[in-house]
Length: 497
Image (cartoon, rainbow, N blue to C red; front, side, top):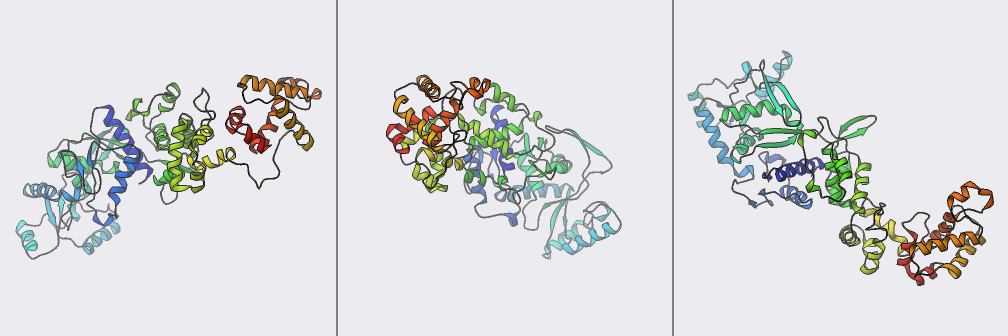
């Protein structure tokens, strides 16, 4: 499933929910050549995986819920044929016997004459065929299709008001399009008009590649005697490339496939949050003002969607994901990360075996006013927490930053743990003692003191704490050192020293 499909479904579900409407999933499978094995299940499961479950429609390849079924178009064949028969009886459709070679010849002649290509006007060989001749051809077993007898005039314009794009003027459709193919199944155009009428659809949210089809679709509703639904055409998700923009493509961009996010371990909530971010221009400000509200509480507005394609930016998505994960409890991080690891990362699964200790590790700098924001996806978690389980045994040269002399490093560590460190201290007392150590060894108690008179000190308290941090974790940058030391415990601290 393309991320654009998930994007559209999320918006459709949101609109249905906030207007007491119905979100339904209809499988449009009349083009049997394009059908792939388990395709329906893949679509339904991808939506379900993101909490986008239909109120009505297909629930898997075979089953459905709702009173307006079947919700799979290939099972509605007789319905479409009944409407086609009605149009034939009214003279609004006709059988066409043109072979593919005949259609190629028409196209070739149109191109030579520099005219529009298609089956319309003077180029329609079968449009005015007498009924008795058509009946005879059918009785003789000749292959045929059913075409719409278009009442359109391309010199006239239709005025269409799209929910997202606003007013759009387009020429009327004059193409005698196929409505029933030679296999007896309808084309998408014909089937969707009938189904949307019979299923009571009043808003169609779809990609704007369908915008040029609006004149044809409105004409079909008119010819069939139905009231047309409103249309909201969503611009495609875009990506920057070489100073320009192009559509996000599954062929070129791994992030275009919904499966990518599962493989990378980007939480579903993060994906949905980001998609809402690019869908509505006011969402980002709403989120800043309502950090603790759920996505369901945001009031979505189709009119606040961009007319041109939204820029899909993975860097921005990962930033959004960091914020989402920062609000998770340690238990939520543990459960989601473990579920991902069982499918994707055996080493991480092994690390997380000790749930009690892992929850302490994952609880560091979590649940406070400024939670840690160092993880954007579960595939980053192992590297982010590995030092809490073991130091890199192959690493022999740790980067201590300001303090580099071995004797000085050993002195800082020795004096601190022999004279100052007590695991029972609260955070303030712990930090005050770190300052006392700094002062004893010739470092400034405060960074600002050092900056004011650098010649008076070896460094400042931050340099002291970095020595302790690197000694215990092997890293210069980690979450809160006090919390790390509390989780490691005195025995493990001694081992690491």
